[in-house]
Image (tube, rainbow, N blue to C red; front, side, top):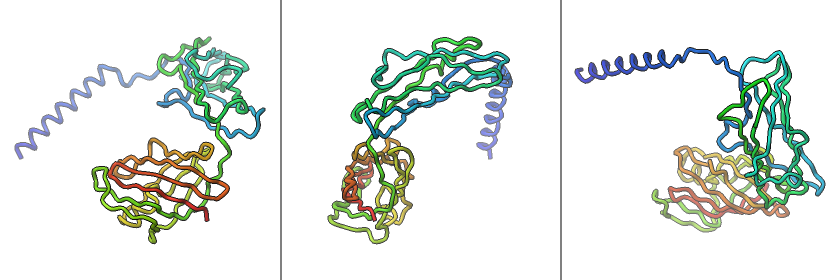
Length: 282
């Protein structure tokens, strides 16, 4: 009881201090500024957009949103944008800007900056990044923190992996909890979970219903961890964010063979689980 009373007093003290600090910092003050920013500049890695190249003359358009942060104005707000010299995307090779100014109409708070992506010029092995900066604005200030945007342009080959796949384990490894193998089995099918589903999550990006490929539900009687993979010209790569319900990261790589309807997968996690798998489209 004595300890509880002490904790209660400390909690009241800290609460009073926090309220006092909030009053001093004027947290109730309403924002009355006026700034322009890239809508996606708040994302940690900017924007990554995949384009499927179907011809050598193909051009696509990306519309990058610019926001007016503040009340709509009675006059248009003009925003000037320039490409940063540090960009690996080259004007006239990877992209073109028809205009480097954008007008936010009176009474509106958003506008679109069109970027022409020269998809037909870009080889899938290239990784052009276009870094754009808002350099000036007429009628509003330029945001200090959100005036830069990295637009990652990626070109991929046509991909169609959506479907149900049977799972055949060439090598199945159950982990020892420290990254090593506890048990290894060759040429095996997990009868309780013999299939996985791939659903479209973006251009060349797929949601994997079970990135343990049946191991968790079939052998551990645990929930199947879903994950994301991408297909770039038949090269399969798991998303860096893939992790199971325990926060254990998954590494997935592989190779698609579209003409045979199979995907070869190699995967592992830090517990030590993993293996090599052949997925066959049903």
